[in-house]
Image 1 (cartoon, rainbow, N blue to C red):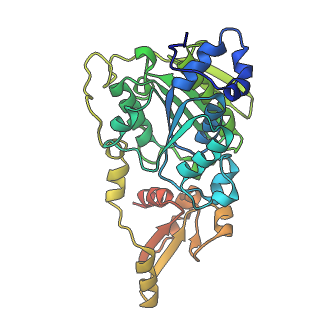
Image 2 (cartoon, rainbow, N blue to C red; image 1 turned 90 degrees about the horizontal axis):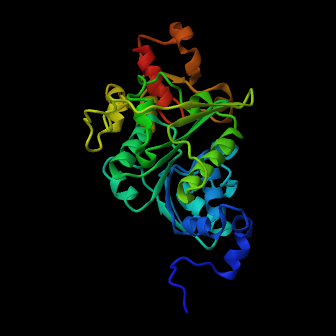
Length: 353
């Protein structure tokens, strides 16, 4: 008699997953759940790389990768999926290539696009679990709200300098990100990893914990970090778990929900408003100023080590020292401030304004 079970394993798969299959309380039943699962990983960066590696190695049947960025040499300090040969390639595609070499028995789907309010609900509809490895507030709120509105668990992680956090949101209607942070901090109050840095090994530690929570959610083993928030201090090698309670004023799931659809999260987090008041100039226009003899002061607000690697001749005043060097900023000519991505430039201009 033929088995009616739609999930089965080849001889090679049985050999590959043998260490899982012999674990009491896990075994073939949990491995079948992994093979049937569809997980969307948002961000193939420092957290996404170890997360993707271990989900692929574990045998997660379908893994979606959302990332619009390309590999930069500065990523290689912590984004272990990539090599020097991947620099300049789309992260999602480079990650897919590496993961297929690791495990040819799973399906990798790439979404080389930015996750937005317009496409989030459609993307999430094809997956069972979402893992958020992003590094900015607009996308974190977007992922959270999209998961709540679509009924998907959100396995969350973040890192900064020497500290990492992990939690599981919206698991069986449990607390979500807005129960922890109902509203974002003011723009510029919390520096990102590009500004504040991150110890390269830390995303590996936290990304693996995130993968663990995804596997627990999929297979039903153990107790996921639902209603809990784990914080890891790498310098002291200490971890603390805090409880998260559901809030009555949560705009998504509280007593009087006010959010029923996705919003403009850049505007909600103050990003669009801050940038709309700031004039931009293209490299070509700046060169034209130079060719025409138009006077201007060029300020580079990156860190000294970044400046030493590559610079365009601007005066180095790191963002962290800007307020102590206000007297160096000219008031009689145009001032142009630049960095690598534009985030620190916007922050610098807000400080000066």
